Image 1: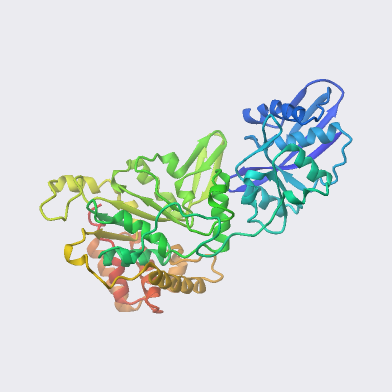
Image 2: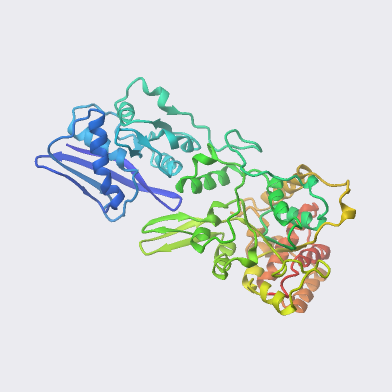
Length: 514
């Protein structure tokens, strides 16, 4: 008897169709075909042992299992469950009226239990797109799939529960998960922030840096803070998370899919609305930052895990040159293509880069006579940051050590007040780009710049003078215009004026040093 079961495979942040075909006929042996890797081939012994543990009879006949299409490489242990269900269906007289209604994925343990697998959210989205009734997933990851509305989601703990769902058992209602869609709001239930977010009001001084962070938050501009040790760069970077608005429904879904595919979905709660804040160590590798893996098992890196959020790179100038230069593509394209011998996968990577660095090897340049570095050493230190990288960083801020006279400063705005201005500026941008396929000033291409960032003759002349006197590239030119548009939005002004251009250009003090 031939049985077909819906399954899937994750490629990037999308799932593609895989059909598990099982046939039991005269002969002996169990045969698995369909370009399966070692992990899938090993599943046969797990499946047979799990079935025996739960009392399901393994037929003493020839069992052929085909994972179609045959030209698509299958990997991972998630095919255990559909293979087991296929064998039981083909070898028994059990009535399974709902066998063709669900995508089934999950790993089996030897006692018949069902283990966690990555990609639950992707499988649920695939089932809805395919027009199926729902998905049957391990209980430990089924909560991730609850972000997808309009389908049934069953979280199962054993193979027996899977067969109960497929047979239409009236007692399976307790296995059905409630679909709630992506969480929205500032403090979603089930999503914990694993870092303490400082409030702007608690940070003494640093008005210039706070202003730069507000501009960056007003929509996705990259920022670099340069300053001596203890000047507050890391604290300011963490405080940025407190003025960012929650993600929209569409943003939350895409970001949740990235976390789901690399097995981090359950750690983030059901859905995700708090913008990611990723802070990898300064010894991180290119593969960890950009993404990598072995064979065709390609996983997203930190730039993708920070999608729609913040990527904080401390000690930026001390990162290996290859790591720094690997950011060129993601910063420009807002996506990254990870190529391996057997796979080429594209991941979204639209993040806000927040970089922090000391100004010199000893770290104390600009702090009186504490710096002992020669001019050539300071120049060599910052020259690690190439021109193309600095071109892509819109705001460059020098963070000075707080003076004692500022410690008792009273008039400090809270993060909530700053966040209100950021939200207002973002609303302006959303309305401006309605129907354009973009949402932010930082995403504007040349056509958008010509349409929404027209400069009067005086303002254009001032910008041309700055470009010639500083030797700025055309990329830096357009980034200044985008940044000036955001500064104008924060002030509620419709037109870009010379003061906006001058402030935006003032945030590029490192261009002459790199």
